Every structure is written in C-alpha cells, then in structure tokens.
Length: 115
Image 1 (cartoon, rainbow, N blue to C red):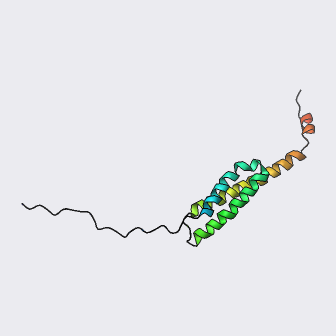
Image 2: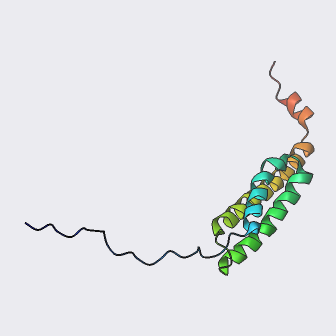
Image 3: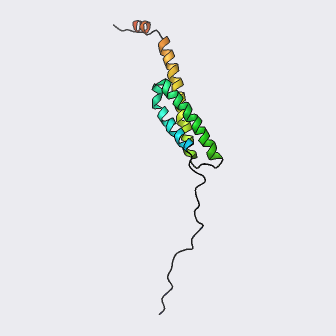
C-alpha cells in the first residue's frame, strides 16, 4: 500500500498590491468638520464657517479620490453630506428665527385664550 503525496492546497493567486491610492487627509478632515458642524449649528457664527470649511475640504478630497490619488472616497462623500446638512439646518434656523420674531405672539395669545 502506497501513501498518497501530501496536499498543500491550490496554487497561490495573484499577490495583493497596495490599495488604489493613499488615504488623503482632506477627505478625513472634511468628514470630521462636517460631523462637528451639525451640533455647532446652534452657534450660528461657529457652525456655518465650520460647515463651509468641511464642504471645501470634502470637495478637494473627493476630487483626489476621483483622480485615483486617494482611496477614501466614502469619507469625502460623508463630509459633503454632513456639511451640507449643517448648512441646510442653519438656513432653516434663520428662517424660523425670522418668522418667530415677526409674529405677534401677544395678540395671538389674547385672541386664543379660553376662559
């Protein structure tokens, strides 16, 4: 009785190379600024500039990812989304503030008081 030769598995495939590009810091910082800008919208003078900086850095990071110089496209897209949401929230808060301040609450309360 002869013993079969040892089985070492299938031959190895192609070696795995480096990722598509380096991870750039512009997309990462844009995402961080976008996330931070959402709760900072309540402080309009702080939140809006942070959101604008997040949009700019995320856009630059997205352009690098499109050209193949970076591999973190998802972070850049998340930064754009969060920064855009913060800007939309800020605009909504400004409109709400204008409407609330122009409304005559005293007259409305007097007319709708039930005794």
